[in-house]
Image (cartoon, rainbow, N blue to C red):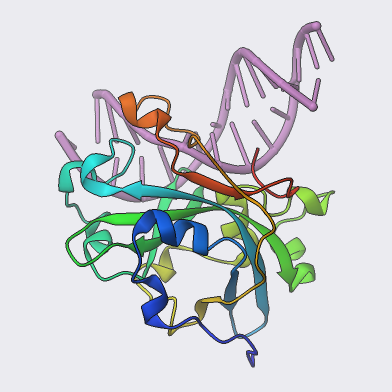
Amino acid sequence: MTNSFTPLPKEFYEEPTLTLAQKLLGCVLVKITDESITSGVIVETEAYLGAIDRAAHSFQNRRTKRTEIMFSEPGLVYTYQMHTHCLVNVVSGPINTPEAILIRAVEPYTGIHTMLKRRPVPLIKNLTNGPGKLTKALGIGMEDYGKPFYHSNIIIAKGKEPKTIVRGKRIGIGNSGEAKDYPYRFWVLDNPFVSR
DNA sequence: AAGTGGATTAACT
DNA sequence: GTTAATCCACTTT
Protein backbone atom coordinates (compact mmCIF):
# COMPACT_ATOMS: atom_id res chain seq x y z
CA MET A 1 0.00 0.00 0.00
CA THR A 2 1.42 3.38 -0.91
CA ASN A 3 1.71 5.85 1.86
CA SER A 4 1.29 9.61 1.77
CA PHE A 5 2.22 10.24 5.39
CA THR A 6 5.68 11.55 6.21
CA PRO A 7 7.04 10.31 9.52
CA LEU A 8 8.25 12.91 11.98
CA PRO A 9 12.04 12.79 12.23
CA LYS A 10 13.96 10.99 14.94
CA GLU A 11 14.81 14.35 16.54
CA PHE A 12 11.13 14.98 17.24
CA TYR A 13 11.32 12.49 20.08
CA GLU A 14 14.35 14.04 21.74
CA GLU A 15 12.32 16.03 24.24
CA PRO A 16 11.52 15.62 27.92
CA THR A 17 8.80 13.01 28.25
CA LEU A 18 6.20 15.39 29.65
CA THR A 19 6.84 17.83 26.80
CA LEU A 20 6.68 15.11 24.19
CA ALA A 21 3.43 13.79 25.61
CA GLN A 22 1.82 17.15 24.81
CA LYS A 23 3.51 17.48 21.43
CA LEU A 24 2.07 14.12 20.39
CA LEU A 25 -1.49 15.41 20.75
CA GLY A 26 -2.77 16.28 17.30
CA CYS A 27 -0.22 14.09 15.55
CA VAL A 28 -1.36 11.24 13.33
CA LEU A 29 -0.69 7.64 14.26
CA VAL A 30 -0.50 5.57 11.08
CA LYS A 31 -0.33 1.81 10.48
CA ILE A 32 0.48 0.56 7.02
CA THR A 33 -0.24 -2.98 5.91
CA ASP A 34 -0.29 -4.64 2.50
CA GLU A 35 -4.04 -4.21 2.32
CA SER A 36 -4.64 -0.81 3.81
CA ILE A 37 -3.56 2.33 5.58
CA THR A 38 -5.36 3.23 8.76
CA SER A 39 -4.68 6.31 10.83
CA GLY A 40 -5.99 8.34 13.72
CA VAL A 41 -5.28 11.69 15.30
CA ILE A 42 -3.84 11.31 18.80
CA VAL A 43 -6.13 12.98 21.32
CA GLU A 44 -5.04 11.47 24.63
CA THR A 45 -1.66 10.48 26.08
CA GLU A 46 -0.16 9.51 29.42
CA ALA A 47 3.48 9.88 30.46
CA TYR A 48 5.25 7.20 32.46
CA LEU A 49 8.46 8.33 34.09
CA GLY A 50 10.29 5.08 34.72
CA ALA A 51 12.55 5.34 37.73
CA ILE A 52 10.38 7.58 39.91
CA ASP A 53 6.95 6.43 38.84
CA ARG A 54 5.34 3.51 40.61
CA ALA A 55 2.75 3.17 37.88
CA ALA A 56 5.42 2.49 35.25
CA HIS A 57 6.53 -1.01 34.41
CA SER A 58 10.07 0.26 34.67
CA PHE A 59 9.70 1.71 38.18
CA GLN A 60 13.08 1.91 39.90
CA ASN A 61 14.66 0.94 36.59
CA ARG A 62 13.22 -2.54 36.75
CA ARG A 63 14.52 -4.16 33.65
CA THR A 64 12.73 -7.18 32.26
CA LYS A 65 12.10 -8.68 28.88
CA ARG A 66 8.95 -6.61 28.63
CA THR A 67 10.41 -3.25 29.67
CA GLU A 68 13.71 -3.71 27.88
CA ILE A 69 12.77 -1.42 25.01
CA MET A 70 12.08 1.49 27.38
CA PHE A 71 15.79 1.65 28.14
CA SER A 72 16.53 2.17 24.48
CA GLU A 73 16.54 5.38 22.45
CA PRO A 74 13.36 7.47 22.14
CA GLY A 75 10.97 7.16 19.21
CA LEU A 76 10.56 3.40 19.32
CA VAL A 77 7.35 1.41 19.68
CA TYR A 78 6.64 -0.14 23.06
CA THR A 79 3.69 -2.49 22.86
CA TYR A 80 2.57 -4.68 25.71
CA GLN A 81 -0.19 -7.16 26.11
CA MET A 82 -2.89 -6.67 28.68
CA HIS A 83 -5.31 -9.57 28.82
CA THR A 84 -6.87 -9.67 25.40
CA HIS A 85 -5.67 -6.21 24.48
CA CYS A 86 -2.48 -4.67 23.27
CA LEU A 87 -1.43 -1.15 24.29
CA VAL A 88 0.89 1.19 22.35
CA ASN A 89 3.49 3.44 23.87
CA VAL A 90 6.14 5.75 22.49
CA VAL A 91 9.52 5.18 24.09
CA SER A 92 10.83 8.48 25.44
CA GLY A 93 13.79 9.86 27.34
CA PRO A 94 17.47 9.25 26.57
CA ILE A 95 19.09 5.84 26.53
CA ASN A 96 18.93 4.12 29.92
CA THR A 97 16.10 6.41 31.01
CA PRO A 98 13.11 4.08 30.88
CA GLU A 99 10.28 6.47 30.10
CA ALA A 100 7.36 6.07 27.75
CA ILE A 101 4.16 7.71 26.62
CA LEU A 102 1.01 5.66 26.41
CA ILE A 103 -1.35 6.53 23.60
CA ARG A 104 -4.77 6.27 25.20
CA ALA A 105 -7.07 7.46 22.45
CA VAL A 106 -7.15 8.57 18.82
CA GLU A 107 -9.75 10.10 16.54
CA PRO A 108 -10.30 7.97 13.41
CA TYR A 109 -8.77 9.73 10.42
CA THR A 110 -8.22 7.59 7.32
CA GLY A 111 -9.19 4.00 6.58
CA ILE A 112 -12.22 4.10 8.82
CA HIS A 113 -13.88 1.36 6.82
CA THR A 114 -10.98 -0.99 7.48
CA MET A 115 -10.99 -0.11 11.15
CA LEU A 116 -14.68 -0.93 11.42
CA LYS A 117 -13.98 -4.26 9.79
CA ARG A 118 -11.34 -5.03 12.41
CA ARG A 119 -13.53 -3.78 15.24
CA PRO A 120 -17.23 -3.72 14.44
CA VAL A 121 -19.02 -1.17 16.62
CA PRO A 122 -22.40 0.52 16.24
CA LEU A 123 -21.01 4.00 16.91
CA ILE A 124 -17.84 5.46 15.38
CA LYS A 125 -17.40 7.26 18.67
CA ASN A 126 -16.60 3.93 20.33
CA LEU A 127 -14.14 2.80 17.67
CA THR A 128 -10.91 4.20 19.09
CA ASN A 129 -11.78 5.87 22.42
CA GLY A 130 -9.55 3.64 24.54
CA PRO A 131 -5.99 2.32 24.48
CA GLY A 132 -6.96 -1.26 23.70
CA LYS A 133 -9.58 -0.22 21.21
CA LEU A 134 -7.30 1.88 19.03
CA THR A 135 -4.67 -0.79 18.69
CA LYS A 136 -7.21 -3.26 17.43
CA ALA A 137 -8.78 -0.73 15.06
CA LEU A 138 -5.40 0.30 13.66
CA GLY A 139 -4.08 -3.25 13.55
CA ILE A 140 -1.23 -2.66 15.99
CA GLY A 141 0.10 -5.66 17.90
CA MET A 142 3.08 -7.23 19.60
CA GLU A 143 4.73 -7.71 16.23
CA ASP A 144 5.33 -3.94 16.22
CA TYR A 145 7.37 -4.01 19.46
CA GLY A 146 10.65 -2.17 19.04
CA LYS A 147 10.01 -0.65 15.62
CA PRO A 148 10.97 3.01 15.10
CA PHE A 149 8.05 5.37 14.60
CA TYR A 150 10.24 7.41 12.25
CA HIS A 151 11.07 4.56 9.89
CA SER A 152 8.75 1.56 9.66
CA ASN A 153 5.20 0.60 8.78
CA ILE A 154 3.92 2.13 11.98
CA ILE A 155 4.56 5.85 11.98
CA ILE A 156 3.66 9.11 13.64
CA ALA A 157 3.17 12.02 11.26
CA LYS A 158 2.55 15.71 11.71
CA GLY A 159 -1.10 16.56 12.20
CA LYS A 160 -3.03 19.61 13.19
CA GLU A 161 -2.53 21.75 16.26
CA PRO A 162 -5.02 20.78 18.92
CA LYS A 163 -7.14 23.68 20.17
CA THR A 164 -6.89 23.28 23.92
CA ILE A 165 -4.79 20.77 25.85
CA VAL A 166 -5.88 19.78 29.34
CA ARG A 167 -3.86 18.00 31.98
CA GLY A 168 -4.97 15.71 34.79
CA LYS A 169 -4.55 12.50 36.70
CA ARG A 170 -3.91 9.24 34.93
CA ILE A 171 -6.33 6.39 34.60
CA GLY A 172 -6.31 2.77 35.68
CA ILE A 173 -3.43 2.87 38.13
CA GLY A 174 -5.39 2.96 41.39
CA ASN A 175 -2.94 0.80 43.33
CA SER A 176 0.21 2.71 42.55
CA GLY A 177 0.50 4.60 45.80
CA GLU A 178 1.26 8.29 45.53
CA ALA A 179 1.93 7.98 41.80
CA LYS A 180 -1.76 7.66 41.08
CA ASP A 181 -2.26 11.40 41.56
CA TYR A 182 0.55 12.56 39.31
CA PRO A 183 -0.92 14.83 36.58
CA TYR A 184 0.75 13.02 33.70
CA ARG A 185 -2.28 12.62 31.48
CA PHE A 186 -2.91 14.99 28.60
CA TRP A 187 -5.87 15.23 26.30
CA VAL A 188 -7.65 17.52 23.85
CA LEU A 189 -10.45 19.42 25.53
CA ASP A 190 -13.96 18.36 24.55
CA ASN A 191 -12.80 15.83 21.98
CA PRO A 192 -15.44 13.06 21.90
CA PHE A 193 -12.82 10.35 21.44
CA VAL A 194 -10.95 10.77 24.71
CA SER A 195 -11.51 7.66 26.80
CA ARG A 196 -13.29 9.56 29.57
C1' DA B 1 0.90 -18.68 41.71
C1' DA B 2 0.05 -13.93 41.68
C1' DG B 3 -0.61 -9.56 39.54
C1' DT B 4 -2.03 -6.90 35.93
C1' DG B 5 -5.93 -2.97 33.63
C1' DG B 6 -9.08 -2.33 29.49
C1' DA B 7 -13.42 -3.85 27.25
C1' DT B 8 -17.89 -5.54 27.50
C1' DT B 9 -22.12 -6.45 29.41
C1' DA B 10 -25.53 -5.93 33.01
C1' DA B 11 -27.68 -3.33 36.55
C1' DC B 12 -28.89 0.72 38.35
C1' DT B 13 -30.28 5.92 38.96
C1' DG C 1 -25.31 8.31 31.88
C1' DT C 2 -22.98 6.01 35.59
C1' DT C 3 -21.45 2.27 38.36
C1' DA C 4 -20.50 -2.96 39.11
C1' DA C 5 -19.35 -7.39 37.82
C1' DT C 6 -17.06 -10.40 34.90
C1' DC C 7 -13.97 -11.77 31.29
C1' DC C 8 -9.54 -12.48 29.43
C1' DA C 9 -4.01 -13.79 28.29
C1' DC C 10 0.30 -12.76 29.20
C1' DT C 11 4.44 -11.41 32.39
C1' DT C 12 6.94 -11.82 36.44
C1' DT C 13 7.83 -14.02 40.90
